[in-house]
Image 1 (cartoon, rainbow, N blue to C red):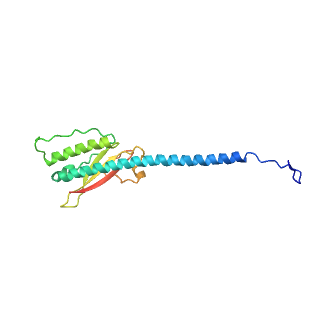
Image 2: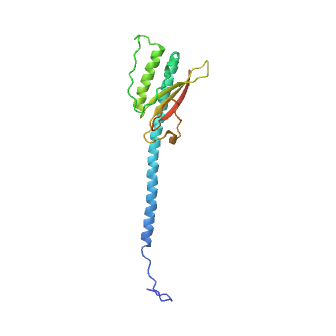
Image 3: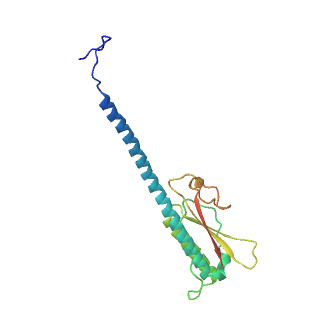
Length: 182
């Protein structure tokens, strides 16, 4: 060993390599945790996107049914409070088996759509309002509602606030509106 002029002995430094390896492992573990978090969030947002896509398709399906049955447009208004665990709905039959009235067709369409939403989305529901104020135009807004299992608050997703009359569900459902002009 070498001695310094002051009489102290210069020793080899030990453990510096081990400390550098520990710091590198720590940084790598933070990076891996961040990647796992990103992966989990991408899965969550992918599922939310899937729900929104299904809701959009079903809203367009009902709007097409409304356009095909424009004579029964007033019968499509459905404003029951939201139920996060909706029961199955009995699909009504027409009084005359060979010819349905526009009101009967609307009742069948609503029952089928409510059952489809119940099966396709978690807590899937329906709310249909009629816009007032326009005399010659029939305008309806179809609201598709569902519960997002990952989020307790609709506002956290930047979603559209649900209309008045949906009811106070806790947690709040996700709402997707589609305006239909007949």
